[in-house]
Image 1 (cartoon, one colour):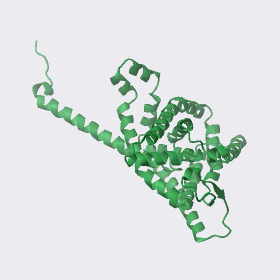
Image 2 (cartoon, helix red, strand yellow):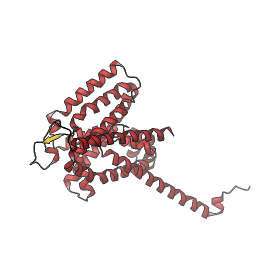
Image 3 (cartoon, one colour):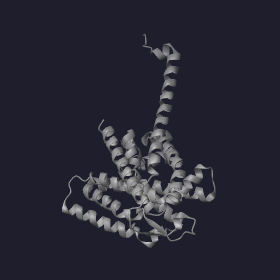
Image 4 (tube, one colour):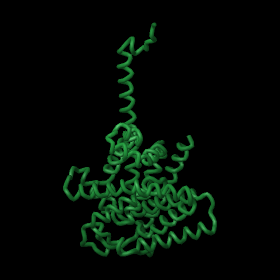
Amino acid sequence: MPTETTSEECDPKIGVSASNESVKRSIRDDLKHCGCGFLMGAADIVPGVSGGTMALIVGIYSRLVTAISHIDRRFLTYLAGRKIREAAQHADLRFLIAVGCGILLGAGGLASVMKILLSDHRTLTYGAFTGLILASSLLVSRQVISWSPRRVTQLLVAILAAWWLVTLPVLQNAPDSLIYLFFCGMIGICAMILPGISGAFILLLLNCYETVLGAIRSFVHLDFSVEVLGILVVFSTGCLMGLLAFSRLLKKLLATYHDSTIAALCGFMLGSLYRLWPFQRDLTPDVADFKHKTFEHFIPREMSAEAWTTAFTAMLAAVFVLSLDAVARRFSSR
């Protein structure tokens, strides 16, 4: 009885060609996802710019959130049973690895720039951060479906709570412990995956932004010392645990108490702006390490050239975030 043969069976060259084309397409996809991750990493390193927003713009947000949510018990069961292929398919691991590599490259590329800006141009940098956070707060507030007196009360309570937290001495002089760094990673990663919320801003409030930034910068410059690797490993482990533990809780809060959660997040961002007030007087000029410096807030008595420049920088930063959101909305609608 005659059997039907495919074109690949008749001509092996066709099968080889199709296989090569599939490999090329996979490599192109990996490079594309790595490029998307690079943009996310570059965004995440700047307080006030959300990597989640950038993921929306480049069109990988839904896939990214889905892949992260699939790092679950089933994924661990596959790993325990040494079913690597099934685990990789379940969590879209190839996609996550490509995006993760891009995020590391993007964060590493801007780490040196941010370090210089914070050290040599702190007033203008904090002014830009303030504009970024104000615009991001506006965008987050738009996510509240229905504002009510209750929501406004929650917003005000969150503003006061955030202001109280950022003025605590323990946050102004954060401990140099790996346990604290692990905790910062757990908290910061939850913000990094939310559009409109900046993970770098959370790290800045927890006073560990400079520590992580410095470690990334050193690693990019091929400094593989025990201290640098220890900081990066502990922080990354905290990020992983935060994804596994808090991302599901955050998802449930947004599903069950959406407006209350968003109102509280918005209030937290506004209240925390005290930490980024651009005009601060250095009370410890002899201290070299930025993290251990002490600053005193002040209000300029007159609008000097620096004050006008700082205000203009804040305005430009706010316009940048609003424009970024407009682009994200256009791409997500498509």
